[in-house]
Amino acid sequence: MSALRLARAATGRDGIIKFAGCYHGHSDGLLVRAGSGAMTHGVPDSPGVPKSVGDLTRVAVFNDAESVNRLCDSNVAAVIVEPVAGNMGVVPPDPQFLEDLRSITHERGALLVFDEVMTGFRLGPAGYQSLTDVRPDLTTLGKIIGGGLPLAAYGGRADLMDQISPAGPVYQAGTLSGNPLAVAAGMATLDLLEGEEPYERLEHASAYLEEGLKDALGTRPGCVQRVGSMLTLFFGPGSVRNFEDAMTCDTERFGRFFSALIEEGIWIPPSQFEAWFVSLAHTREDLDATISAAGRALHAID
Image (tube, rainbow, N blue to C red; front, side, top):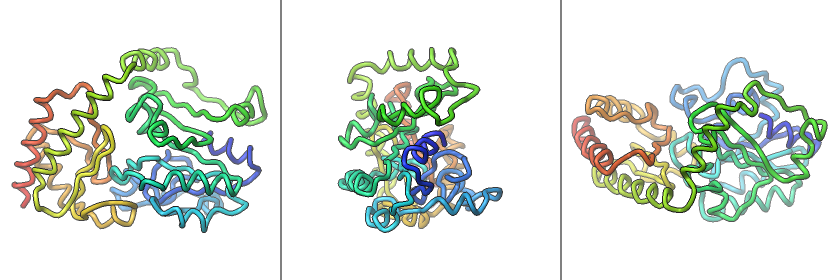
């Protein structure tokens, strides 16, 4: 919400482009074809959002730069995107997708905003953008930077951030801004993540779980998609590149799989469209137990 307010102030424009199936918080203008829980419950838009606000948001297709090219005109202030979609299940960007977004927004005078609430620190110490060499104008962060406590942040180019109050005219405030407990927890988490070793451990563990789930799935319709320590087991499609692909998933089958795993003592996210997160706390025994339980659960629902 705050990053987009800044983008509108900096560009003098009102329009926003987001992607179907991507979720960026529950501010009015972003609850348009949102992902995550909205998809699970079959209500991608929320009552209570004024039409005049919703009309300012244009919806593009993830992994389809041409859909952005068609929508991005002189009234668009920003394009906001999860660099790795995690709210319609884990959907990685096509190799050229983010580079194309950078080119289009630069050419049209719009800002590019990366929502790294999921990917920031989870996929690397500098977020997913450090793995692509694509630099957004603004980045939003949350959840993980508070070490599990309520905290969020946004940042970007100095000329943009200098427009934020009190240095500039764009208003910014928050009850939890700079909360000492959350900041201390976040700093402690960053100390623990220092160096390459934690991310090497995460990658190794996540790849192990991915291969185990693929083996368990076997020839059943579906796929496992992973980026770093984020992954999703999709039921139905052989691959998922966007919201439309995700909507072809067999959610009823996922529901039975979820319940069967609960019976096995394994708790996964309760939605086909949520990402699974591998943690440094997960041991090889935990991963083996998850893979074995998934195999039994898949067999039980066949």
